[in-house]
Length: 89
Image (tube, rainbow, N blue to C red; front, side):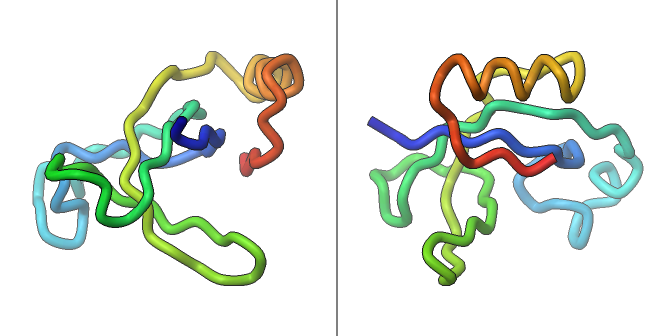
């Protein structure tokens, strides 16, 4: 089963991101989301990537947004109820 984490992040228009896409640069909204991580080399699907640190080492994981939260309180309550320890807001 893929790992789940909660992060605050800036939305992107596409997988290129703001460094290479004008539409992504114009998108300024952020939200707190539940992300499902997929390890590097997981199948043939193209996914957006996020850098995650595990045991002091950084690695890039593909992810899918599972759920967006209304605020920090809701996200922390969800993490506590579902045993999600990796929360960065």
